[in-house]
Length: 65
Image (cartoon, rainbow, N blue to C red):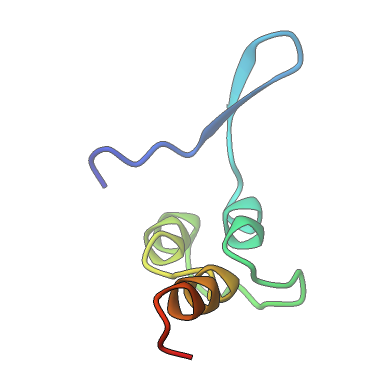
């Protein structure tokens, strides 16, 4: 997807790509979530999710809960 950046700097400025599992972790998924598609498809799916805790905070902040 254009504009999606899934790289991270580590080890004295070297850049590496986040793994699909790391992307899922950032989105709040547990490590026991089964990845049943290719890495490319998983990257696409990971950016389509919303972090549930963030959604709850937004709802509460806006007085809907």
